[in-house]
Length: 357
Image (cartoon, one colour):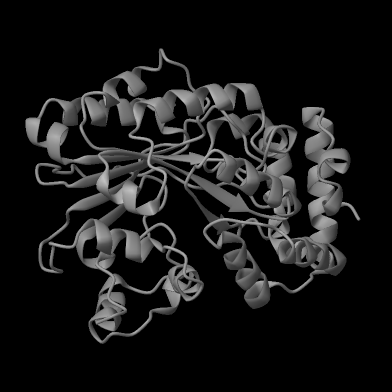
C-alpha cells in the first residue's frame, strides 16, 4: 500500500483548546479518524492529507514519509506510540500570522486581532491523564514550549523514567528566543533523543517584523545554543540516523513570499535543513491577498534562483494549485498591517513593500 500513512494508527494529537479529533496537526477538515484509517487501508489518498500529497508530488519529504521512515518496524496494530501535545499558549512573541488564541503575548494587541479577524472564544479543557510508559516520540508545540510550565512539568516526569530518557524522542518546536539559563533547555540534556524544529520566516528585519518583538541577533544566539546541542545533521538521511537533530520550519504567507529567496539562501549557506508550509488562516495573510504582479515577480525570480532540495518548486506548485487574487483580502490585509504598525511602531510599507503595491 504505497499511500499508507501510519499516523492515524500510531499517533495521538492533543490540544487543550481544540477538542476536535484529527489524525495530525496539518490535517485539513473534520473527517473522522476511522474513515481516514479505512481510506489508507484501501490505498486511497484522503483529501484532508493534501499537504503531504503536494509535497510528495514535488519530491519533497512529507510528514507522512517522515513518520513512516521513523517507525519502519511498527505495524498499524501496535497502538499509540507517539503524541503531539499542545499543552498551553504561553509565548514570548506575537507573530503577525498568529493570534491571542495561540500566544499569551498577543493579548497586548487582542483588540486589533478581534477587529480584523475574529473574536476569541476558545475555552481550555482538561486534558486526560496520559500514559507515556511506551511512548517512542512526544512532540511539544505551543505557544512557545521553552516558556511553558506545563511542558517543564511533563518533561520532568518523563526524565524520572529510564525508558523515556533513553528511548523516547522529545520533539520540540521553538522560536529560538532562549538563553543558556532556560530550565527546559537544561532539562532536555537528560534525554538521548531530541528533535528541534526552529521557526523562521525571514532574515534580519523581515523576521523581526513578522516574529515581533524578536531581534535577529537574539534569534542567532538561540539557534547557536540549539545547534551545538544537536548532532548537526547536514542531510535528510543524517537527520533520520542521528539522535539529536535540528531543522527549520518556514511558514509562507503574503508577509514573506518575496523574502523567501534571501531566507533560503541563508539556510542553504549554513547547511541547515528546512521545510515549508503555508498560511491558510487568517485568510487575509495568505498568498491570495497579493496582487498578480507580485506573484509574477516571484515566479520570475524563481526561474533564475539557485536553490537547494527543490523547496522552491513546492512553493510554485502551491501557488499554481491555490492562488487566486482576492481584492477584498488585499484591502483587509493592508488595514490589518496598518493598525499593527501604529500599535507596534513598525513599518510594513518599508519592510514588506510587495504587500503594498
